[in-house]
Length: 106
Image (cartoon, rainbow, N blue to C red; front, side):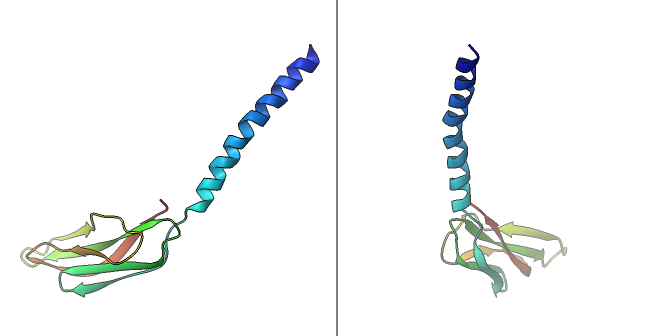
């Protein structure tokens, strides 16, 4: 009886181990983009781009300031990019005070 019990435990561990290793392998394949930069491209727009996506995505962020009232707020591009230029605009009546970007690993 003891032999059967230990065989079930070992068999159960062997059945679960491929699932554990599979999860780690796929997680390691995706990383955050590298070589990223952002800059003001117009008085009301920010552009961001990364040289290597590494399987991840990025998008531009603009800190904007209203001309009337001086209220500051931030805007981010609506679409995550894996290549090319990501652009975000400040709304009418505001301008860019700072440029940035955000990344994610998927």
